[in-house]
Image (cartoon, rainbow, N blue to C red):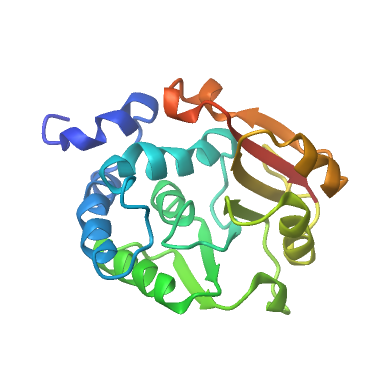
Length: 214
């Protein structure tokens, strides 16, 4: 692994079963996003230099709790510049990811990153999740897009029930801070997992994965 770029050391502390193709894709992310961010601001300026911690590893916390099987279909609601969808698509090359956002220029970045890195299991759609008809997914993922109540309202009609995976089909979202009121208002009972218990990094304190089964 001597040829592995130093910037991937953080990711490789927690995951070590990547192919050479996956390593090259992950290594390419930083420069691609820096280049696109200069044109279309999809990542906070202060975050761009910590992209592997703040964005890639954070996205991959979902992979740590959901070992998706080949052929699984996942929708990323409000994907922005491609998180968590892009890192997850690299991690799960045999899973189909559909990245959706209401802002077309953000999807332009996702398409360009996917093309440049050779990610072939991503499709994109310029729309709002609630406008998608006649499609079903095993899971919906989202990161800091909207309150849990809204995310569930948008994703529930798109989700297949049940499933035969390690965790039940449903919504998996990444959120931070005190979520008590948000969860109460949603009237849901999500399974809640602290990200810093998965990746013991100071940045992940007060950050959580919420899973709502369909």
